[in-house]
Image (cartoon, rainbow, N blue to C red):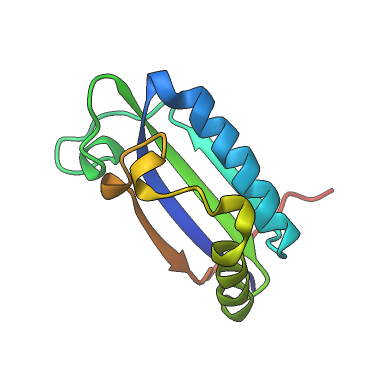
Amino acid sequence: MPYVDGFVLPVPRANLDAYRALAEKAGRVWLEHGALQYWECVGDDVPPGEITSFAKAVLLKDDEVACFSWIVYTSRAERDRINAAVMADPRLAEVTPENMPFDAKRMFFGGFAPIVQMDAPR
């Protein structure tokens, strides 16, 4: 089964174009190093929760939108190899937490081992 990294982060609506540009650049780098899929999604139907929610998790502000992203790899070992290569890739050297188009301190992420995977019949 594959391995998945997942991310949730707050992006100011005014920075969505800059976030998309960064995501497109980063996605190309991840895929070139061997990732199987790279997804970046902007919240479109993300209800506020009373106890938990995407908004609560990232301390979403009124002028921000929650984004949900994931990267798929063939295995955890491949994920570790690919992430090391991506972090060393000079095309992303200028990207730092200070110049990202979102507040990186409020982003959360993790690696996940799938236990069920289903695809629609073709």
